[in-house]
Every structure is written in structure tokens, then in C-alpha cells.
Image 1 (spheres, one colour):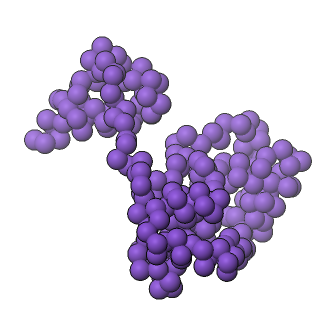
Image 2 (tube, helix red, strand yellow):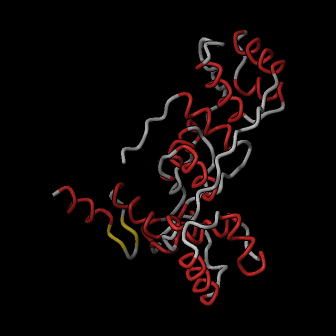
Image 3 (cartoon, rainbow, N blue to C red):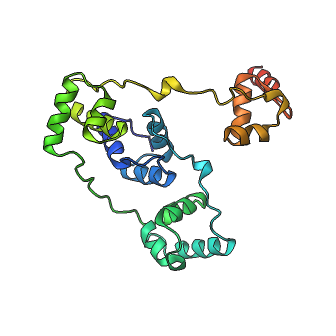
Length: 240
């Protein structure tokens, strides 16, 4: 199935769905993907481009489940395929010990999500009143920055950006207000100050809070060599 493109309408829907959650959990990413009929990877990528902080799927901790609980969960889902939503499974499993998001994350790692009943789609509640929309339009057309609108209306910058997309689609404003300060322009090199040559991949990963695999990819792309990994040689081999 082709991944649908991110139109202004879909982007606004995603922003409204996520709301003020920060960081956005991977379970929320999966739920948003279900609602928008796209892939979790596409949703996570779009959110990061919009400067949301998003939990990595690799960092989702699913080991809160014992081996026995995992086996029981697998059997429960298989025996009731398509009968229960994540929330209903959470209520019925182990006396409600796990939240629906924990259940969802675990089943995702077990590749059993197709056996779960889809959660009914709900209408996103209106987050801006008509009066607030009018104020928003006045501020936007007056040249206010996203941060200024957010402060004036008691919203996050991401919520304001999402609303701006919605108003732009409705032709209520001519353009999305500019952002005064962009996180993208202030990104810090994760390897800055790291003595790569004297450290192992694992030590680097721990210091910069990345996976060992991610560090190896980074070293290969930059042609850098750690004490136990020759990224320069890997890069040369790939180029050849």
C-alpha cells in the first residue's frame, strides 16, 4: 500500500491528535498512524520535521513483561484475534497491571498488532473556540511570530503551528506565521567534544545516548574511527 502524502489537512489532523504531548510516545505515534492510515515511521518522521520530540521505537521498553506474561499475552491475543482493542486487552490482562500503551508497545514488538481490534476513531475535540480563532487570525495577519501567538493564547508552538495549517487550508490566513527561533538551526553535533578515537562504540553510545548501531552508522558516514570500529574503512569499502 502506498504511503499517503502529507497534505496540510493531514498535517493539521496529526498536530491536533498529538496535542501537547512531549515527548510524543511511540504508542501515540502508532495510534496516529492508525487514525491517518499510514505507517508509524511516516508519522514519526513528519513529527520530527515539525520539531516535535518523538520517542524512538528502539527505546521502547517492553521488558516490563516477564517471559510468562509475554507467553500469556500471546495466547490471549491469538485466542481472541480481532475481538479486543488495546484498551480492552489492558483491562482484561493481568488484572489491569499494564496500560493500553504498554500493551500496544509490547504487541508491536511481538508483531501481533494485526490481531488487535482497531480502536474506534474519535472526533478530535475543538481545541480553539471561534473567539480564539478570530484572535489567532488577527495576530497572524498582524505579523506575529508563532511563539508570540502561542504565548498570547496559552498554547504550545506545535499546537499553534497545527492550527495555522488548518486556517491556511480554510483560506483564513495567507501564510503560516514565521517561527522566531528554530530548533533545527540550533542542533548540536552529538559527537562534539567526544574523543572518538580513544573510545569504543559502546562507550560512545552510552555517552551520547544512542544505540551502538546508530553510532556505527554515524562513524561510517563521517569516516571516523573508534577504538573498536573503523568507520573510515567501512566508508571506503561502501564507496568502492
